[in-house]
Length: 360
Image (cartoon, rainbow, N blue to C red; front, side, top):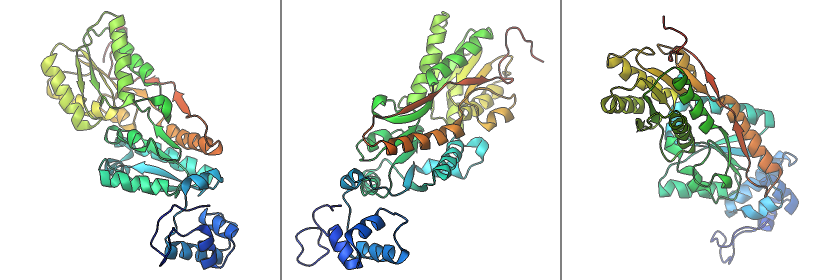
């Protein structure tokens, strides 16, 4: 294993410390030093400790590309988080989109006997450099990202890192270049819109997600195609950021611009929480005056008044599938990106009044 050139850690040294230097300083063979750096359990604790000390003292930095070509593995994978993700981890599970995929990731990691490293990311240049340096240094074998509105920049930021990355959610730009797990969101948007059409609704609005998220783009496309197929107007649309507050603001805009709307497809359950508040505050009743369909089928959907019909995403299962996809990539270095797409289902509750079923 070779190191990268340049380091002033040894007086008079023209190049960086090598693996042989680490082995000599630790008093072990080159093979033992390599095994210790790769985290293999066959290395005796005393030898591993000596190698770790030599690495720190010499400032040794392994060449990641050479290490991967040699088949080295750390046994660790990363879950890359943002500040909002950290907040979501502390939120009640019924209000957190992030909590369910995280649970699935933890299950998958335990099943695979891997270690999980959580890394914090942001869109600042300094943090991007720090994150890339960590990933390029070979501390982990691969990484996973749950794509949300606040993390949509990450596929572009991580595109060229020399290790596999799997996303929960389809990256919108050049998805064929990325590995991801997702629900068929276009079909999900169609299912939601068709449910409202079948209920006899004629002015069907849409609260959409951000335009830089593939999931939001696809859900909107499905809604729009169904409306056009039925000869219905598709101009009643407002966008928000998948938050309760965003749903409130978007619903207020829609009611002001389109006071005749009688249905709305909301692109996330959290936004639907805010939308329902605004609909009630306007004096309208759900589902009698306005029927509503959400997306995600989070626990909160069943606790709302009325309980919310919602397109289901099996988020915990999808978290486990991210781990499986990453393990598949690690088992076949250099293989093409993998994608896993799940068929969506509608969970019917009481927020839509079907044309053949009177309200009570």
